[in-house]
Image (cartoon, rainbow over the protein chains, first blue to last red):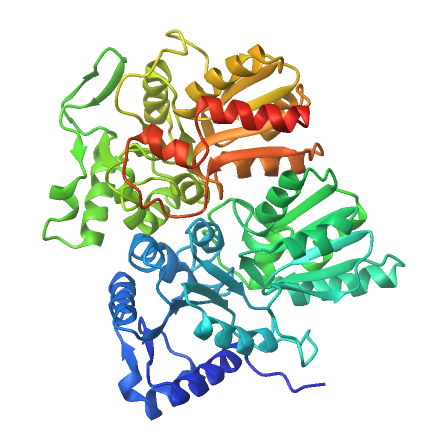
Amino acid sequence: MTPQIDMRDAFFDEIYEIGRSDKNVVFLTDDMDAFSLRRFKADMPGQFINVNVAEQGMINTAAGLAMCGKKVFAYGIASFVTMRCYEQIKVNIASMRLPVTIIGVGPGFSFEFDGPTHHGTQDVAIMRAIPEMTIFNLSDTSVASRAARLAYMSEGPVYVRLDKGAFPILSQEDEDFLTGFRVVKPLADINIVSTGYMTPIAVSVTEELASRSLDVGLVDLYRLKPVGDLFYESVLAVSERVVTLEESASTGGLGTIVCELLADHGRPIRVTRLASKDKQFVSYGRRSWFHGQNGIDRASVVNAILSGK
Amino acid sequence: MNRGMLTQSLGSSGITVPSIGLGTGDRFWDSDISFSEKVNLLKYGIDLGLNFIDTAEGYGHGAAEQIRDDLCAMGLPAVIVASGAGYMYSGDGPTHHAVQDVALMRTLPNMAILNPSDVASTIAFVKEGCSRRAGPTYVRIEKGVLGAIYPDGHDFSRGFSVLTSGEDVAIAATGIMVHMALEAAEKLTASGVRASVVDVYRLKPVDAQALMAELSRSRYIATLEEHSVIGGLGSIVSESAADYGRATSIKRLALPDKFAFSYGTREWLHAQDGLSSELVAKQIARWVTGK
């Protein structure tokens, strides 16, 4: 088994290599740090700008640099780097179709002790509504390093949701990550579609169910926009029941994406949408505790699948 | 907590508002004080009893985080009145088009979203927003003259109203598009397709079970909105269909997920995206009859 490394390290190590080989790459941060980022700052000071806590200014700066031909990465906390500067992203980046990659660290309840200002449970819904936007929601280091490269190669705006911590690697080494999804457990009648931080939890759910003689498939939808026809044809069209699992709120994330696709194709299968509640959590606890509050912890997901709906 | 603020009645609506409302246009947002100070000012005003705020959708995007943290998280009963829904500012380009606002506002906890389709519903919804004790209300308002749909005193409490009945296809529409849906339904009836029109004016919270029970009376379901195809009424109905075990084929008629850089009248912009009563009727007829 490959040694586990922090997902941010995997992503920023790749960004480091990209910055080394292309002087046109500029990295902006809103005063957000990461251990693996210090090397970039130390070795490429001319390509690194800390704009400080000023998200709207950072996005506008990114737009200006991109208009001058730079490839820009703009980094901040998921909740702030999307919602605080939504209009700047929509108008200055997306409407101009500029190659700017916005990196949101700490999606979902990652910043578990910082309250609802820091919770990233609405960012997918709002970023998805912006035309031209590509959204990656990273679930392990293999997709993290590949997403850094794909974002660099993109001609339009990209939003990357980046988690902290080490996660098991779910992919084969030669995976190219161009389809937007990967089958983690072979498809069955009942299939879980999960994304980001929830995919490792979904793996343990399928293991628990297998021990109870229920084989459930698992698909990791690591690209939330665009979602291609291939995902519908090879996953939803062959499922008898779909369970969606995400840490975002139920209003506009993965569950909504799946419901829209099923409605568009008129496929009347049962859907169980497991997501965070449409609620402001003004409470403090471990991330796993928040998952329990929202019925998206391992035990609740197992029960939801076993109980039918 | 009205601390001696001078109040008056709002037109003939019966709503009591402070004599001085708060305008949040350029003078407010572009003044020298910082953004957070403006938001604190807004909060202070609400605490004092201020319940009448005029803004436009375009300002709301820049203020999304403030709305979320300061109004939604705190459950404050502010009414956000957004002028310029959809392509209302049709000649001002994508900066002024409000086609993502429902997707955005819908993700905010405690938020209520009301999208009126005529004068009676507009008055009722401003009143409803003002009477909410906890949590903000987002009301999308129109300019210009719209045909009356509802009589005074109509009961809007269900969140949707059935305007016409037809067993072949149910068209769920919202806001200004309710008028287009009614015209399309007439054209459909003339061509032998019986269409019902359901005005879904409360976009949050939605009684999804009741809405699906109503829409499922017809064999097919279509949605019609002046909003991006992502995150608005089409998404709401798709989610509702899946959640209530009635997942079915739904035709989502909405604006495409792209920026509209063209300039013209609102109707012309709609038609570019296949939305006019003729085009809607044609698309639905072809879909329902398979021809």
